[in-house]
Image (cartoon, rainbow, N blue to C red; front, side):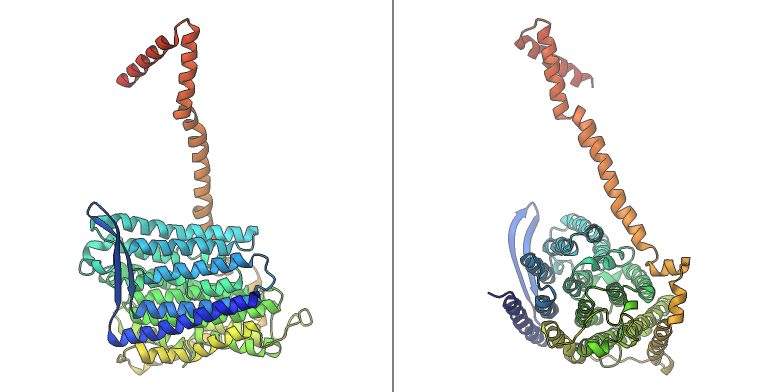
Length: 567
């Protein structure tokens, strides 16, 4: 069978199941019902190990989005990865990624969640190091070690839940006050997977993976796993954890927005925009706006997948070049892809009546109605302005600006596989925000004075003006010079350096020293093998004195007995 037809079959399979699950989620939401499947695997003392699946409208609609985006990415990869030598490995890794995410989505049990969680971490490492070079290896090591911290925290939560005899979220309702430690462990684990401060360095580093992988990882699978886990824990918000979550998310939003304004790598700008939107989701979760955060999670999956796929088409046309300073004027050579790119960027910025507008506007206005401190609200709106700023900066650089490297590449826009895979996502990014808002979101009265009501519009306009001025060539010439402030803001507040040193270098050095001192040192001399060597030498010495083997053995037993008694 031709390879392109395999991609088509995978796309049709995922697409069909996606629509089936979407309509099933609408039915379950209308009926206010869910299906809870549990069967006991084995019992251990007073604890029963259950395999649990929860099918409700939240898990079904999220999996439908994951399958739709995964199908589009599979179809897109048929042309983007054309000529790849290890195509079967690539297909199996992507399928394992989607399977791990499905297990995580349907699991309300910590043990089965850990299976999907660990599967995501392992497969993401294999995908980040897919192009086997030193840069990919370093990025993959940072990714897997950062995610490993979350794995350890979930393992600790599982061990602590032995006190309660069950690991299911459903059985925890009503006893939230006694589960503060478990809540802290799970929320901190979600910060590692969703790359919040101080675990943010791995997200831009994971751009070493192929672009189809980036569009899948950064839209609906790996980075959203932490947000989805906190969405499932509705009882988290009863204690001080919401303040901890608010501080981490606001700092992440602000840091990612500043970093994206100073970044010139095409894919890293989009990765930092993902980091900013994840911070916005965590911020809304810290306010208890669980449904709005989940709404933004779904919409972000659509337009971020479209943004990565259209960016991949542009990079593909530039023969792998990713510096936005050498791009420009693609609206002439790639009219359809530039349209998809602009639509996804405007949805990311929250422009009215696109998919990103409905949840972002709700979060901003509902945050003004909540009892929160002034500093977090100010940083939230500054981060929103920065989001609009780097979005318009990226549009100006790639789409509108004069073509810098004219004649260096041959870019043409055809109705190929990559364009077809983007066509479905661009229509969803335009219309699905309103559709999901009408279907699943209850109408809530937002009562604000006109000054606060117009604050969101004012922030967006000011952010667009900042992005326009940042795109000016004179300003870029100034910030291209080295200065400590530019280095600080452009390097994510030195997080990559601080993460790579204590997270990667120090454990490896400590493990190496423990290996030489332990396994190859003291244990080699005084462990089982060393003691047996000494005993055999001592027995040979006794036999050389003229004692028989039986007398030597008895004397050796007496010496060992005296040693054990007096030691």
